[in-house]
Length: 60
Image 1 (cartoon, rainbow, N blue to C red):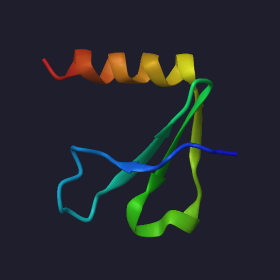
Image 2 (image 1 turned 180 degrees about the horizontal axis):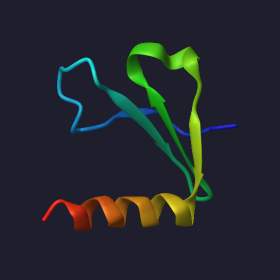
Image 3 (image 1 turned 180 degrees about the vertical axis):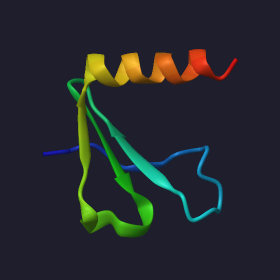
């Protein structure tokens, strides 16, 4: 389903709480770096953009 290249979040650092993203034109996938076969959350492009905007707003 996700045909994009996975990349580790720059916020993950070396901690055990790592996530990877695969960002495409229509969907974004999110998975646990330590458990890649454990499942993938898939968000539509608009929903993921709204999520990121909300996270950025709450970091004030």
